[in-house]
Amino acid sequence: MNGQDYYIPAAAMAVALAFKLPALRHSWRDPLLRSVCALVLLAGAVFTFAAPPTIGAVNRWSGIANFSAPLVYCLITAFSASCLVLVVNWRGGPPEKTRRVSRMWITVYAVVVVCLVVLFALGDASVERLRDLDTYYANTPYIREMIALYLAAHCVAAVVMVSLCWRWSLQVRGWLRVGLMIIVAGYVFNLGYDATKITSVVARWTGHDLDFLSTFVAPPLASLGALVSAIGFVVPLVCQRLSDNWQSWTTYRRLGALWQEVQISAPEGTPSVQMSWWSAAELRVIQRESDIHDGFLHLGPYFDRALRDGVHARATADGADEDTARAVADAAMVTAAVRARSEDPEGAVIGSGEETVLDTADGPRDLLRISHALRHAPMVQAVRQQTALPAAGPA
Image 1 (cartoon, rainbow, N blue to C red):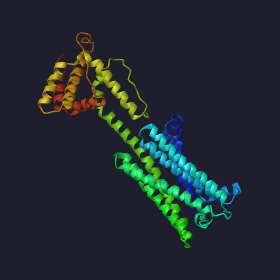
Image 2: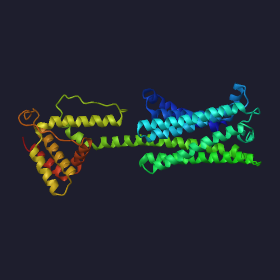
Image 3: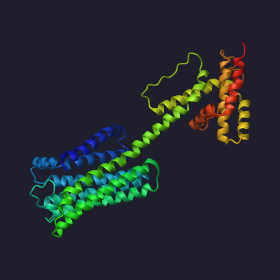
Image 4: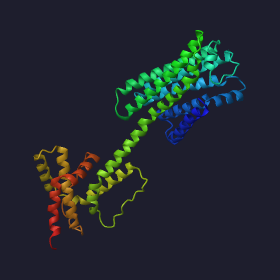
């Protein structure tokens, strides 16, 4: 692999981190968000410093041959720890247990990082190797142990991640399960990286030469594994947000019939709220629900409880369930009230009798049912035709 094979994934990680930084600045205390940002940062650092051009540059800047080796190994170890900590915080649970497990993984891998640095300092790696250091120094005292330690730490993290994410995926559904399965696939590639590296190193220990596995096969597996895993972490967040937005726009559209029906009830001169075209779907839904409730308040004096009860009884007799019967009855009452309000432009009815309040205890779901009934319920259409007859006659 050449430099661009490392720098392109690193650039992708940098872009992802840039999108996350504003949220991190406002929610610094969120452990899940901190874990995500740490993982993305470390993944980008691993790709950047593992690139052969960067390895050579760091060695020159430091003045120490192969100084990049412990640096890259420490970054890989820290990245492994960040993955474990992210999954622990992502899965959730009792906060104290989550913090305890996170601290355990951080402590264990911090000890590994210290050991890697100490072993490199004790060993002799005076010949610079940009691509095949693992196999070239596989039999060198202390350097050998450093290589074995970083591979063991990475392999343990990969095995734990596959086990945790696989078991968790069997307990959940939807986009979270998809993301977990993608993460499992990514860490299978990471296990392939470990297998090729370990095989080539052990081959050196036994006097054989399988260096090509470490030099040419392992790096693409590591790159692919990191990218696939990163996609797995992102998919549930992005797709769930898209799904929520789609649901909000669907709700907004389905409320349209009821919203249009009650517009006539607004007194003349009432300012209408104009939302910008870039306004979020959630805000549009809230505004539409608010407009509908305001319409109900203006229609209150015209609500006919007897008509509602009659329609409810007929709908129930026709086999409708309670929620549907109530929605049809409410829709019929709203339709009749709108017609009555249009025939009373001076508002003479207001204040002349007891006001009826429309009960929407089930919130948006009730409004959606009423809006659906306005368009599709035959009883509501019948009420609309009956209440429109007086207005159609001669004045």
